[in-house]
Image 1 (cartoon, rainbow, N blue to C red):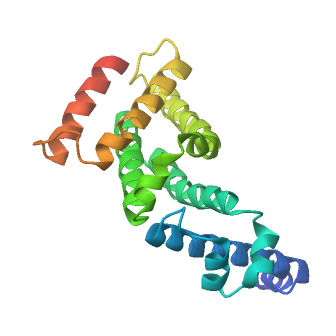
Image 2 (cartoon, helix red, strand yellow; image 1 turned 45 degrees about the vertical axis):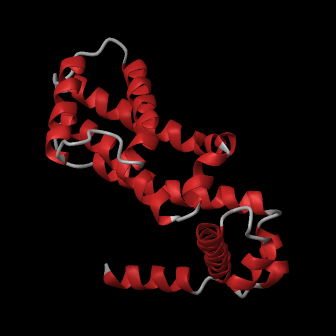
Length: 213
C-alpha cells in the first residue's frame, strides 16, 4: 500500500503540468494577499495597481496577467475571505451534534467570521460595505452555498423528527436572510447588549425551537 502511495505522490509531484498549476495558484494567492493587506492599510481608493505590483515583488506584467484591474483584485480579496466562512460553515454542518445545535452553530459561525474578516481588514471595514452591489455580486455563489447547507441541516432535522417544517427551502431562505440582516449590527456590537454569549445563544435557540418544532 505504501509503495503505491509513494509512487503516486512521486508521479504527481514530478509532473511538470502539476508544478505549473501549483505555481500559478501560489502566485495568484500571493497577489491577492498583497492586495488585501494594502487595501486594509491604505484603503481601496488610495491603493494603486503599481502599489500592489511593488509590494508583491512580481511586477506589473505579472499582476496584469492575473487581474485586469483593481476592481477585479478587490473582488478576489472578498472571495478569498468568504472562502474562510464557507469552510467554517461546512465544518459546523458536518459535526456530530444535533440539528438544533448545527443551526445555532451556523448562525454564530457566520456572524463571528464576518466580523473577524471585516475587523482584520482595517480600513476595508468601510470599503466592505461601501459598494453593496459589488459585494452582493461576489457573495452570490456563497449565499447559495449557505442556503444549501441550511437546507441540508433542516432536512436532517425533519428526518430525525427534530423539526416539523412545511417548506424547507422557505425556512432556509428566511434563516439565511435573517443572518445577513444581522451582520452590520453584530460587527458594531449592537446585538444583545448586556447579555452574555451563553444567554444570547440560549434565547436564540429557544426562538428557533419554537419556530422549527
